[in-house]
Amino acid sequence: CITALYEAAKKGHHLSHIARFTLTTFLVNIGMPTEKIIDIFRASSDFNERMTRYQVEHIAGERGSRTRYKPPKCETLQTHGICISPDSLCKGKLHHPLTYYQKKLKDFK
Image 1: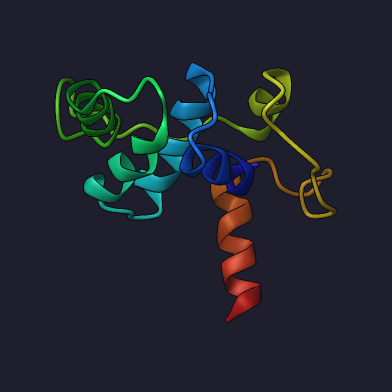
Image 2: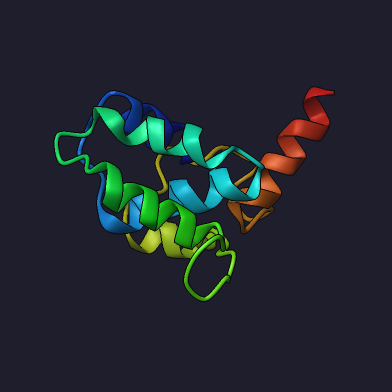
């Protein structure tokens, strides 16, 4: 799911609010710097530097309530039609994109 969102954003495809929120929260939580996250959205036809920076910094807990948001669970992504082509790891075993990422990272090492 996240890879598809990442690729779509880099290509400038339109992403829904929940898709942008999901991608941003995921990237924040794996440690991607704010500037790199903002750069991912530059290709979008509706890109607005000020708005994007505010949203990314807010999601990262650098502004506003100082709450660092987590990505939605897989169930929520499925409800919104964001979960695309779930693999065997997704089906019944893992229920969160960050858990999936950690498992894949561990298997990769």
